[in-house]
Image 1: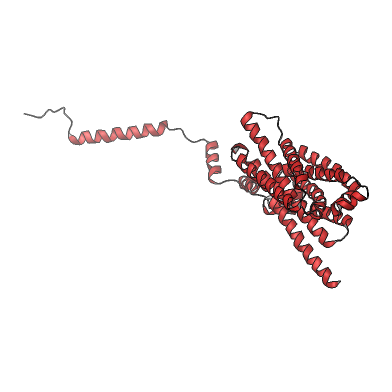
Image 2: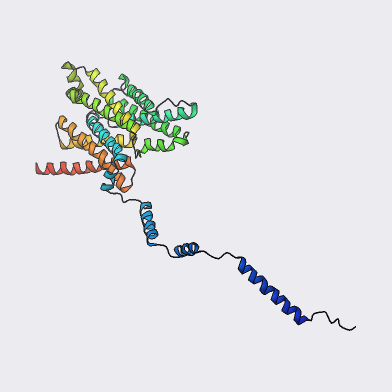
Length: 348
């Protein structure tokens, strides 16, 4: 059949398709928005950050870095940590002086037994709060009640013999420690508070507890400033004191009550470990260095106060557990004191 004269050839169709594609490309370029001057400036700033932006980034990075922990940083943060450091000093000074009577009475584990009883009372209050909803039961109440219960047991007439007394101290200590650990596993929500009680890892002290510690320290300190002669007499020789007409039973009871109050409060605020360290280590070394009980009381109070304060400062600087740091400072004082006592013997 003859070809139609109006039908385009293959070459003409190919040229027509190319022309249509070029027209479509030109239309797409015309419809795209042209960048404005502001957008061009913005793109320029994104590609090349300004000097101000670089400086701001450096400052922000510096603030995000942890500050260097040193003595200057500690005193700069006094408003945050001052109460806790002073609490260690107050508890250390008070328990250091009372520890003289504990060592002279040969009842070293008395404070350990009382502090574990206080720990059990605190954990018991947490447990009652969680299980029965008794939120009005403050942990300080439990510490005081269980400490005085333990004191009544240890002050009974049936355990006045040395062997029986040591057994009773061990019983109270084990019962308090076991009860604390058993109930502690039942109050997972308060696990941090339980660890604080056991190991003395309290970093901060609330103002109410600090003010209570100040008042108790002043009251108990005044009692012992006035009655130190009577307390010393009954501790060294109770029979002779009775012959001289001193109220031995009343003085012993008052001594035990003041000791129990100090131990319970210190355990509730600082923990069991530093409480035991404060009540034993300062008195131990003070009696090694001086023979006079009155001077030993003063020296033990000073050593105990420095132990509590310096232990907290070292824990802050080197990021250590507070209670363990305070206990190790007390151990360091004992080692220093032993060296001084040895040198005194050689030069005597």
